[in-house]
Image (cartoon, rainbow, N blue to C red):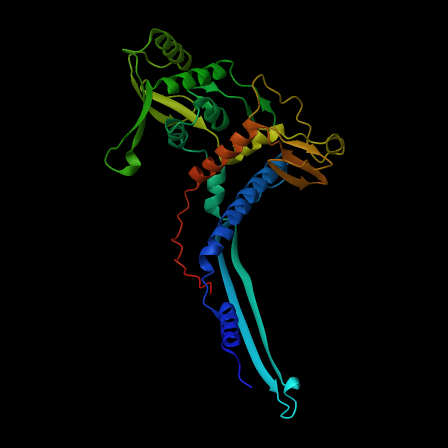
Length: 360
């Protein structure tokens, strides 16, 4: 009994389909990159929100970084086939020819994810040291709104104080909101700019704020004059060296006192809505009236049930805390927090080794 040519072709094609060489690496990039990106983004928002809630409860914030993700795949393929015949010489009708084909494929995903608790002395300094004024001004120079960034990260400008929290609410000077408004208009006009003046070395570099007073629209000139008066800037000076501190030591200086990341987080925690039962039993302190005339930079809602479409949500002390998906100021503050945390990170990072992962 001979096997027909068509039968041979079918068996060969089936075996090739199972055992043929196929590249799975490109497909895994498409399948994995966005999910990992989403997971890291969601996890960062949850961790940041949890630490803000912890600070409202006078709890200790903790940070865990995800420095690397290595995803490896193991792909195996097995194929087997058989051919058998039963021949009865005296009965051609009963002659039998049969074949069987078996195959299996498997793929195992073995990701290696590294976690690094942020507990070192360098990270603590980054968390508690005030941000360099140049970092704040560079954000503004790159296009971020001056009023939002300064309200979030600045304690005072030339002695004009922002509202703050140091165990109790400290009201700011009534001129501070007007300073932020004028700064925003000056930023939009393009007649206020920054430049870096380098002396003998990189540590001697100065940041200079220049206010242009000539050849500008009359209305803007009036507003810039008002800004000078509020901040008590010398009218004869056009450029001012930016320094850290409460008050300037010279007429050509602009003193900016910035906040640390920890103070920014603590300030944002004032707008966490603590359940009444937690205030009653003393789990969280009653801070009194923390409202202000301006819209808060962040609002954290709370309840016993989790909403379906929260921007970020965590569970703490038996309740859910979340930021509403339509709360644009809170979402904006989370965005700025990520930038400010990166600017505050001065720890020297070692270059990660290049890895090649075999995927088939």
